[in-house]
Image 1 (cartoon, rainbow, N blue to C red):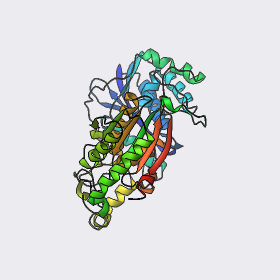
Image 2: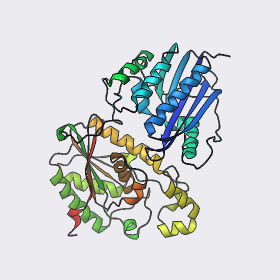
Image 3: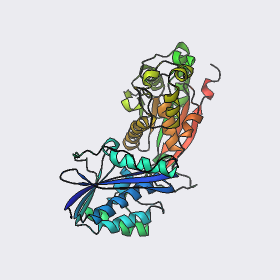
Image 4: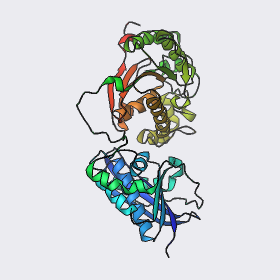
Length: 402
């Protein structure tokens, strides 16, 4: 029996980007929230973006099979939503045929709109996609156990009318578009003008007692040591040499960062230090204040699981995947607010590693292989079209004589 209006929830991903990939899609009755269809498939080796498009296509195909007239597609991928709405270019050649296929499916319905939702409101499709990724990696069957809520809250809409989506096929075929697509900017050796970039000077806070003792130091407000304050002054001189003009200094709200940030601010014209909660260190939960050896002794299984996946959190703590989501928000706010300007960002080892991982398009193993010293400095440029140039990582020359 045909239904008039449905909601498609879709997701996709890969282990490695590219890596073992899969997608999930759920079709619900728009009025009751009842699950009408599920789709999930391991698709071999692919990128996150390809898997997300495949999930959306599978959901639209299922909606068409059900005879739906009106469709709302909900995804936690802003990339796919914005591209299907015509706001962002589809520069990556691997995505253009998928966008064209999706646009062809859109034309089969009376109306389609695309909405972005937070990941936590896309859990069903996310679980299906993760099971498919596990299957692609040879780890598990592709059918998870998923609780299916019957009531679905309305999302925050970012999409325009469905007519924009129907124009995507032509743009996908020709490569023409009017928006900006930061996730699929093509690789290039072409020099870029630095004056158009937002330059971020990433600074890890100075030394604390816990960094000396090599203890997990997350949300506890541990102050700088005397040497940490000396490091902060040396770092301030280094930042002043790197950036004669600084538009803003933003910091984690914890005192080891704000003290470092205030010292830097005094050396670069004394802008007010603006705290940003999204830059705070990972919450290490029950491991807070403990050494690695102590955690290994008390939580061996939990530690192995945490080291194996950024989606796993310490007991009573926070996963790196969650930290990445909030650091992404913080960085995007800075890119938008300070085009062509320099911003100093003072934070902790985990947020800075995650920012650099994404800037370098690296995998999660990068997090365990990169060492960041206290008061080390890293510099990256963010361009309006989504391009990124990493100019230095963990510069500590200014600390050599301390």
